[in-house]
Structure formats: structure tokens, C-alpha cells
Length: 359
Image (cartoon, one colour):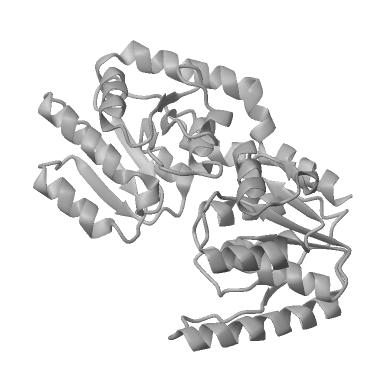
């Protein structure tokens, strides 16, 4: 994996590894691009962790290029020493270096997990296609949307791809559940403060609600490049009811503070935070992206709106804060979904699907 940053991919990998059968698999973890806040969590799994790449920030492009060769060399040595039967990688840096290194030393099963639908620049796209897509023996896509992206963007052979949806630790996510109070409904967004996450659409919707006389409380959980710009927007428009809480460490604890989770993303390969919201029995209002529509149906186990459409989002949010029974009925439908369809997204069941691929 790349590193131990706090992100959807890293959290998913942590839960996935945690649920693998230790009687069947001996697991080691290799980082290709440093450490991060989640390193301690991974250490608590009791598995060996090897740092093949640089642990600090590289100052210039030449240092980065040099580190690629150094990381590849150290990965090759690591793999020769450990002689794994299977190598699994995640995120494009590790996909390229990990799959190529595994191919060099003759690892029989070389698998990468595609988590997103991010359109890489032309150079990186070609490199990943040559050294990861072509050399992998199997590719796991976390949704049908991601599978279609792999085929169209990377020209990956469909025969190589298996779709296994992301999953969450259902028992852990229950810590975020609570019954919504009839008054003072709290909205929340959990995610990086970056353009692709669509925070500005949510703030525009809150601006619309303010003009209509509604000022619900909202929490923006996370950090990123747009922090100051978003704070300036709230200040300029008098949105004093919006609080920036900083980076999300304990997601269930953050979810417990809110009643309605808003996911206004402009692009997603899966949308893990929306799934986490559902497993915390939150009403989820999300962009109608193809990946999210694979597990959320409008007016069933959540609500969907056109990506970037602040007016449509505002209408849904207004209905939730003005009609308490409407909100309660939405929560009841989510509980029904969890009892039936939702169990396929339990990380324990997802881990079993991965184990079948490994066999």
C-alpha cells in the first residue's frame, strides 16, 4: 500500500486485513510511500510492516524519480526474502511498483485493487497500464462503475476483473447510531476538503435554506486544500451555524454527532463514507453518481440528487428538517435495508469474497 494516511482506501484495507483468516494466510504489509496517522492502527494488527519507500517529504522531482528506483529495488529484495504466493496492491503508486516488482521475482498471483475512477495524466496512465494492468494476473474493482472505468480508461481485459464491493465493520459503525432529535437536526459531511468532494454545493444549499429562514447546524469533518476557501464562503454568507471540526479520526464518533450525512461528491469509485453512514443508521443524502447508485436507491435507503445541483439538495434537506416523520420513515427504511441487502457489505463477508479470489 502507499502509506498509512487517513482515507477511505486505507480504512478499508485496515478492516479487510483485520478480517482475513490468520489460519489460512500469513500476511505482511509493505509501504511504498511513507507512513501516516493510521500506522499505529496497522501495527496493532500484529503484522510485520516494511517501509520500502521514503518516509519523509521529498524536496524535488529528481529526488522523487531517484526514490522510485530505490523503492523498487527494496521491494524486490523484500519479496525475494519473503517469497509470497500472492501480492496485492492498492493505489496507483503501489500498483505500478508492487505489481512490477512481484512480476520481476516471479510471484504467481499478482492482484491490484482499483478503488477510484480518477483520470490520471497521460504519462502515469500509460505507465500503470504497462506495469500494473498488463502484469497483474487479477484486478479487483470495488464497483461496476470502477470496472467500466478500468476497461475504458486503462483498456484492462474484462476477463481479468472481478467486482467485490467495499465493506465496513458493522459492529464498529453501530457506535455512530442514535435516534434523531425532533428539533435541531444536524447535517454533516465527512471527507477531504477537496473540490471533488463537492463541499461548495452543500454550502450553496445551506445558503438557499438561510434565505428561506432555515439555519440548521452542520459539521464539516475533514481537512484539505479548500479549508480556508470554504471558511471564507461561510463567513461571507453569514453561515455561522457551520462548524469545521478538522481531520476525521474516529468516524463512528463523528457520525454520532450528526443526524443526516450529506455526500455531495462530484466523482466516486465507490463512496465508502456513504456506506459507513448507512451502517450507522444515518439518513444519507448523496450525489446520484453511478457508483453510489449501486447501493443507494432514491427514497428507499437514502436520497439522491443531481451532482452539483444545490437547489435539488436544498429541497431534500428542507424536507428533512421540516417534517420529522419524513426523517423517521427514512431511518426505518435504512434499518430494513441493513437487515436484508446490507449484510453483503459487512466487511467479514467482503473478506470471504477476497479469500475466494486468493484460493
